Length: 528
Ligand SMILES: *[C@@H]1O[C@H](CO)[C@@H](O)[C@H](O)[C@H]1NC(C)=O
Ligand SMILES: [Zn+2]
Image (cartoon, rainbow, N blue to C red; front, side, top):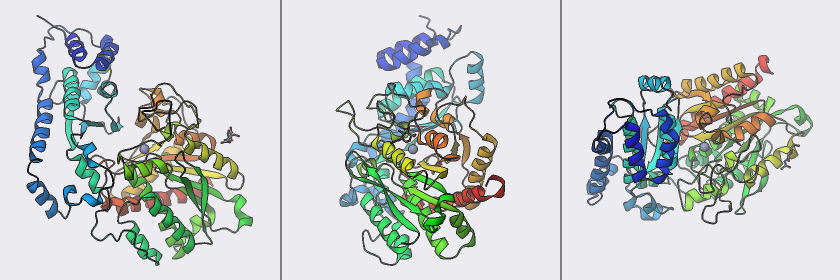
C-alpha cells in the first residue's frame, strides 16, 4: 500500500493520541501529498533520534539500581547526591523521577525556506503545536536561539520525537538532546547545599551577612528578614513598602531606595525593578536582591557614579512579586510558575501573574490547569491588582520613569511589545539602542552574550496572540514607564530554571552592570 506522508502522520497520530490527531488535522492542509513520498511507519517510529533518546534514558534508569558510581562521581566534584542528604530536601523529589528535560534545537534553515515556499508551518510552529497538544510543560522556547525545552516522561519524549521526525526526518533537520537527565538531583542542588552555608545564623555585620546571604538561594522568610536588616542598616535611605496581601495571606513587600529629603522628592523619577513573578525563576530574585545591596554599599562607599545615579533617581524593588508561588517552590513543587490563587477549577490552582495585567488582556484560551492561565478577568491575580493599586496611589509622589522585570532563563534582553509584533513601540530606535547597551554592559562584565529581541517574538505571540497578552512589561510600558525591558537571565541551556547557587553572584554582578548602564543612560543629557 502506498501512503502519503501526511496520511501516515495523521493515522499514527490518531492512534497515539487524539489531541495530536486534532493538531495534525489542523495542519494537514499544509502537507500536500508529495509524489513518491512512500513511507514505512516502522522506519518513522524507529528514527535515530527516538532511539537515541530512549537509549539514553534506559541507560540512566539502569544506573539507578546501583548508585555508587553516580555518587562517587558527584562527590569527586564536591556535590552530594540527594540520597546522602535526605534532611536538606524541602520538596518531595520523587515527583521528578522519570521526568527529563528535552531540548529540540538547531532546526535547519534550508528546510525552513522550503517549508516557507510551500506555505507550510515552520518547525517552531509545528513543534510548538504538538508540544501544546501533548500537554507537556514547556520550560523555555526561543525562535531566535532556535530551541524549545520541554519536560517529558520517556514515553512523551518518544511520542514527541516520533511525530516531529515524521515531518522533519532528515538527520540535520533538527537536533535533540536531553538537557537534564537527572531531574531530582538538579532540583536538589538548587537548595542550600554549600558546606560553608551557615543557614540562618545571625550575623550583625551587614557585609559579612551579604556574603553569606548570596551563597545560597533564600526562602521567603529569610529574604523578608534580610529586608528588615537592610532597613535597620540604612534607615535614612531605604524603606519597606507594603504592597498588599496575596491569596494565601502573605504580604508583598517592596523596598524604596531614595537618598532625598522628602521636599525634593516630587521631581525625582523612579526606576522600578521587579522579579520572581514566575515562582521557579529563583535567580531573578537573588539578582534583584544583589543589585539592591550593591547600590546601597557602593553609595555608602562613596562610589561617584552610583552617588550620581541615586542623587538623580529613586529605585523601587519588588524582589518577590509572587510570594505564594515562591513559597510553593520551597515546600512542594520546585518547578511551580504561577501564583496559588483559587480558580473555577478546584483541581487546578494558580494564575500566571504575567498574563493578568490590564493591557491587551485575553482570557478563555488557556484553562486553569495551564501554566499560562491568565484568569477570567484582568487583574484577577491579587499580585497584579495590588501592584496596580500601589502604583496608582504613589504615582504623584513617585512618578515612574523606567522599568525592568527580571526573569530566567535564555540570556535575553526583551523590549515591548509582548502582545503583538505588528505594533511599533514608541521611540523604537532609542529603545533598541538601550536594549543593546544593556546587552553590551553584561558582555563587558562577564562575556555572556544576551540576545536582544522583541518580547512578542520571545513569547510566541506571533504564533498565538494570547501568549503575549496581559504582561507586566506591556502594562508598565504603556501606562507607567517611559522605558521598559525584560531581562531573561542565565543560563542558556544547561541548568535552565535549576541554576546552581554558585552562579548567584556572577549573575548578580553582570545584571548590576546592566542596571548601572541603564541609570547612566537615563541620566544622559540626550534623554533627560
Ligand atoms: C489605577 O488607575 C487606573 C487609571 O485611573 C484605573 O483604571 C485602575 O482601575 C486603577 N487601579 C486600581 C487597582 O484601583
Ligand atoms: Zn518568567
